Image 1 (cartoon, rainbow, N blue to C red):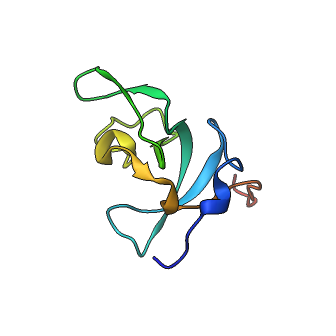
Image 2 (image 1 turned 120 degrees about the horizontal axis):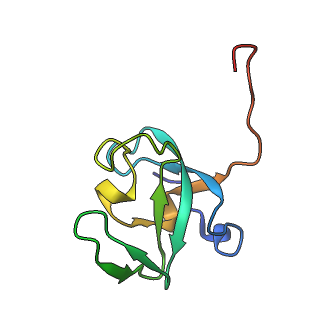
Length: 99
């Protein structure tokens, strides 16, 4: 993972949809919503405890609300991830004729 995204600090905000390197498989990418940044509080899905995200890390969530936390493949499963895993903010979505 040679790409580093230090320029992203200040470029992404909570609520943005981002493209990230998967923490479980660094050769693949995921699209997830940014739920919390370093210094912000969030709630653990496992024990419903609040905790503060460390600087340089973020909390990501899948948008599919029909998935259980274990199925979502997001921070509820892997915990906070490094901001360096973020490749960029998603600004366009393409639809095909079937969407």
